[in-house]
Length: 218
Image 1: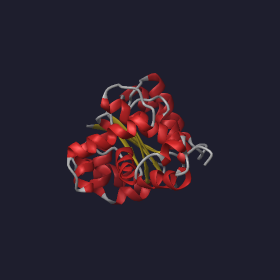
Image 2: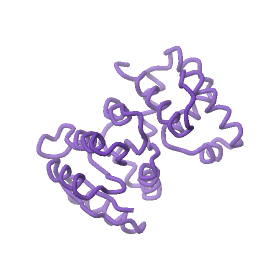
Image 3: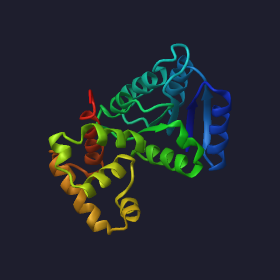
Image 4: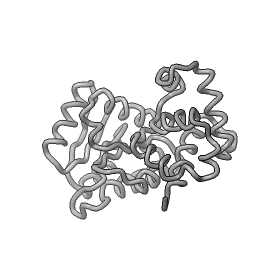
């Protein structure tokens, strides 16, 4: 897997390179600013990009904007955003095109190598990897929204794990239930969120987007 990394802190950038290479992934570029990131995304077209949301020169949302522009040029280009804090708007913007191949993690997750590399792989494969804290905050803020309130406690647990990018098999293992039970819960979630029939992977992304949309302004 060919990876581009964008992180302005040298020690973290170097650590990400070493970690990914230890798992047999090729880091084709590791940059520390927005303009250089835009250049390498255009020229290298990596399998996945791991980006700090705040990069020089603006130190605002430079990394996010570079990622969004790259995905406009190449829809579905896999991008995993790293952030110091939970910013629900950033997560929502990433999912706004309704496609997969996106992730939003807090930098704390980087210190669990297996968890982090698993998230990178899921995003590269076209899935989603949303930080559990984003989902937990949305649950707390929007629990009174009618569609959210209609979900049972078990469906909310499944929704949280789905938003993290977990497969039905992984969700079943985490909740100690059968895959058939998880499939039933996801079907109920799709129905309660008013999502039209489509392929299952796409509906999972749309469910997460609907979830994040209801967090806006909460």
